[in-house]
Image (cartoon, rainbow, N blue to C red; front, side, top):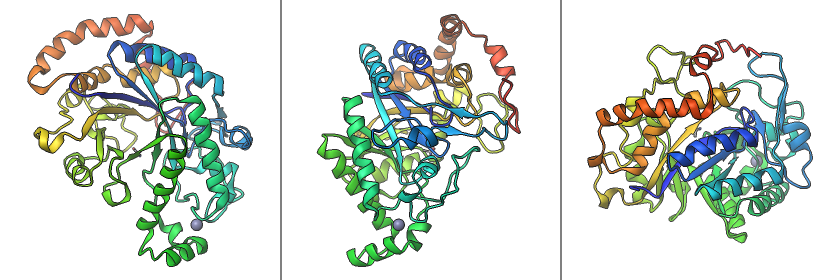
Length: 385
Ligand code: ACM
Ligand code: ZN
């Protein structure tokens, strides 16, 4: 392959995906020679990893009252055994599972269960029922936060032998760190000039905690290479920032995985005119296929790129059929971007091959693509079940 890292990300935090469905998803991943399955296990809308000593993760954070006003409760929590089984299932198919625990933001579900972890605890906050983000970040100055993450990382170590842990780090507005008395005092004491320095210290501490277990972090790249530490791996994801991210990561001695959303976010609409929830860019199959993870840069400028990765965010994907409908055939284009050098690729050739693959995928899943497309959740959201 052109790149050693060829991944897909699924989002059971937004809509729980039972392990049986993940196994079906993995079968097709293996067929297309993806080798990393990234599980986005936590977010504002749900927490899916059980951690010993923290029962409210299940009783509170893994449940929400409804989704987008549909009035239907949603819940789901993996068991340790299930996740271990998934890791084994994937390993037999050449796939490593990468767990993500998003921090310090994207944590409204955690906030609902353990408000005391946050700078300004809101005891009445609920697990989020709509898309979008919350402003609250965990407070790095509270010892119970570090006890919690130590327990989380220990559990991950037991389940995921590879030791790579995605720590998120995306979309974490620091305004409440700016106002928090504990955070302010800590910044003054340490001589930190701003909250970005506090973010760097936060990730230095989480990374040290991981290192005790032989684990290593990854992050969504937020454009400020100064937050991360040389040798770490970041994902370029923000729209139209891929080229500058490649350059900034190289200068900061970071490894980079390409997940630029205008090519790689497979939850975005795939057909012109298809519903975009008011904001998503149409990401056609051809657009996905046009991705060169190195953006034409020569080896001496792109040697730190480890591969390509396609997230499939699931705010609007209630089940496996909808997940597959969004993922394929575009994942085939991403697989080829990970596998083949540019001089071996051609859109015409890819299109010709795809006719057969379409039949293969539909048969393999025994699912009705037309029906799934027609039943895509409407906006405003109406769950048809
Ligand atoms: C992201 O889309 N927030 C990584
Ligand atoms: Zn604080």
